[in-house]
Length: 207
Image 1: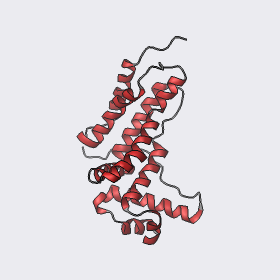
Image 2 (image 1 turned 60 degrees about the vertical axis):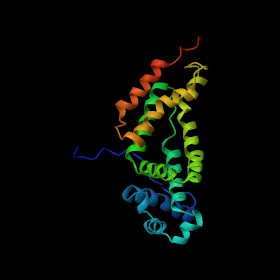
Image 3 (image 1 turned 120 degrees about the vertical axis):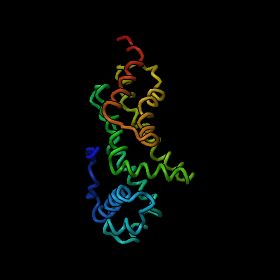
């Protein structure tokens, strides 16, 4: 290979909304992202997160009880910011853009490294697994289905569409490659998933 893959554009946490406390909180979230990407989940401690963020350890413990809590909040914020589909009114364009962004974030970014670390931790902590499923996977599923729901509301696709099943067939393979096989999830792959959707799509309802 010999060269690094281009990383997706992920805007970092700015943290200037609510004064010093919010800036400190955002610095902790960003530090957690960076440290896990560099050292892996097992190599990160609360002390290192605090030091990297430039805050006292007690400040971190005031908001979070463990590094897992910090990392989950960091990833949830990134997901809400960067994994919400745009609405251009063009279903094809919106699906392609969203799947490409989802694949890029999960496979090539610091938040993606955090996501994989959290999924790994969830295999050994059922309480955390349930919390992560409720706080991220359920919410992300609602975001992922937005392009289809909007298209149904606009009358662009049939109201009889099984949105959940179609979503599984488009989003599922991305998570499978990112978490299981490690195969590429490039634009050709995600576009192929969208092409598959349009080949299966029910006929447009009559005008």
